[in-house]
Length: 303
Image 1 (cartoon, rainbow, N blue to C red):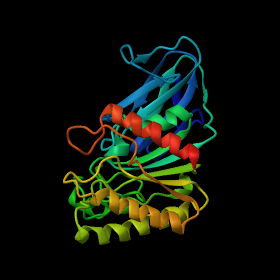
Image 2 (cartoon, rainbow, N blue to C red):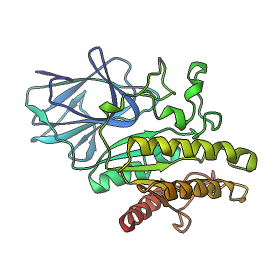
Image 3 (cartoon, one colour):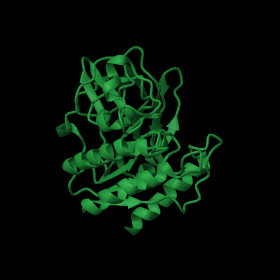
């Protein structure tokens, strides 16, 4: 039997777009969950990007396209690749499929590669706390539109910074038209985590002014969207390579100003966390990502 994507059996999390014949994924690791009690096949549109399938919280592979189930299980289908979307059409199974209710809490996580990484807090914390999530993150992306290393097509250049890209349905690295996101469609979060600024070339005073203005405007818009939602403004784990301290000092100053202005915003410093940084002197190692996530969970528990 074919269970179509829109028959009510599937629960979509993150940003998805309804298109002809399916739901198209956008941004970082959006997923769909359902219960199924028999072997099944995925039905995806041609040209699908990378994806993974999880059964009762464990990643699984297929046998000739068939996912084996010994009993009714919670199945999660995750669109893993940011730039190449996946269109989920449904599943084929001889068994029964039923709706998997949302979890009690939902987390919105925003950032760059320090958030986009499969080893990062954006993966560890929702799994540890058993929360649903929406992750809006992109490697190499700055907050400011005219900064960073993120490569996009000329038509998408106006969205080349998170200060603009966050408000679009699509990641600007995708092909095709960019459209504004309809926030009435979102899963309203119980918590927001923001970790941005690593790619903004914060190396001297000439770069700081524009970043400070963009940061203030962005958190103001977040406050407008989520006025009563606890929002944590995070300090990246590594400073400028030259040791000048511009990156962390600037982000810290901007976050503290936002904390003083908005009652729902809290700055969290990572200066004392002893996060192991990789040879590129920017990104944590896998162990470093784990340390950052663990310390962040402790900090959130204390504030």
